[in-house]
Image 1 (cartoon, rainbow, N blue to C red):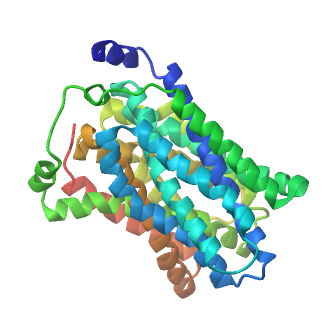
Image 2: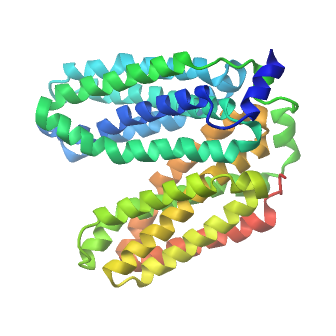
Length: 393
């Protein structure tokens, strides 16, 4: 039975089960992205800025904290079961937002619960999708799952605004719940692969892997997702301020071009890490992103801004599946759930730290010089990564 299951996975990426898992991840991400508009809901209850920040931020904090613990559980139990658990937590939490009627502990508690559900379900669903993909297409499958998230992230806020106009915030919460139910049903319909079939032919001790690596090596490998996240945070959080400061029009086209380029590079070139090894692609994509940060430092026109959006999105589209796959290969394919959870947690930590650090740099030196610093930081860590990080393949 296991032999037949493995054979089916090798026939191609776009199997029935992979498509079910991919669609489930899209609806899961779409449900969560509707809550980007939650501050609008909170404003009507006279929440202070710090209260809104706490309510929105605790979601990310609980997701970061819970992922590594459930990453190990995913490796033991399989992605499907843990994905259903995480989606169930979200499904139970979202309707309770109807009960929020003012400032207090309830919205903080609910956002913490949704963070736990999101941290569990996101990691488990990505792992489940890669389990359902051919073994030799690890990076490509991760990249395509990431595309589903990018599309949901782009569609969610606009869809949410339309829902609020038509049905108010109650409609927003109800639509989020519907998307979660759809995601739960789609995950339920996917196959449950036996453990020996999820990553056949290899077994190694995690403690042995970590024990054979030096502390410096572990820190270098762990630093790359953090630095990558910090640079991504600088691109997202400070670009609207830069566009306004330079009087370059609307920032919307930049993000559209950025997302389109990321989607294109993941679809067309997401499998490069499978063919040439993830470390090589990490290095090349990091150089592209670093050089693009230097271009942003010098941008003076709208056309130049759009060009940096394309180059930046292209590089970001390549580095996500490559760096994820590198961490998976380093920890061992049988520890894939842990590797994916660690990558996402480290990336999110980088996003948070980067917004603080680069905000401080922008105050000291200005917005455009901030991007110069970001490029220097990224390329410096990339050189260290090239020299010190092991070649897995």
